Image (tube, rainbow, N blue to C red; front, top):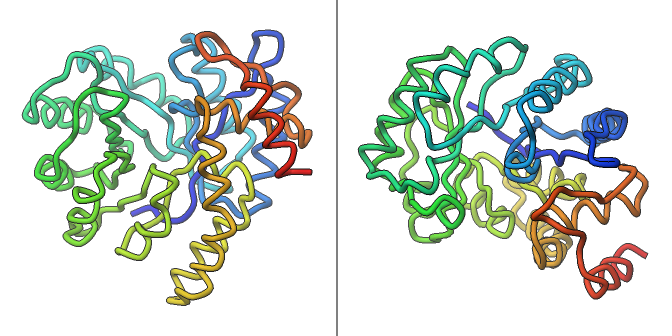
Length: 286
């Protein structure tokens, strides 16, 4: 099982190339802050615009920079099951702990199709697998009954839950599969998820004010709900602000103005944030 505050780390760019010095600086920064693990090359890492050579180089570099200090789960998903299975060897070449695998997108499979997709991936690798349910991006929801079936497979160990349905999330948390981690991917649901027995969060907003998210998690683990609620008030407005425009662009702007990365650059179709949002973020961060 996995738990705690995990970072779906951004991919920094400079002049349309991956900025590896900035990536190394971020890894050191977040390990120092106490992050529980990294999940590179996911949605926040702008995976749709990363080419195959960059993908593998990013894995190699982040494994080198982390050097075994915290676990790494690499984003590895798509809607062609056969291709994903064949190309798992790319990830398996490196000393990573597992993969974060999103529901098949665009072709909108049935629940049985979702189950078979992940079953094939599970059978093809010894890596641990965290499922990722985010229907407002993929076009299909992975229902709880499908999650229960998948949780029985040998190396499917958890779920990043971004289903967007509070009722579904609550029912899953209140009826958790045994030895199966549920981490919220809905940053604004972090406190509620922990209160209902969730195991943590995989949250883009944890790039900013990282210590506060980690302290909130620690307070909940210690059953100090009053302290946790107080800490939640410190970050909840920040979360809303960071998702005002397309993720991860507001986060990249804050990291750039703080000097952690060299540019707030992205690749199209993402573009820098508006002047209005920059002004709001400047006011918040002085």
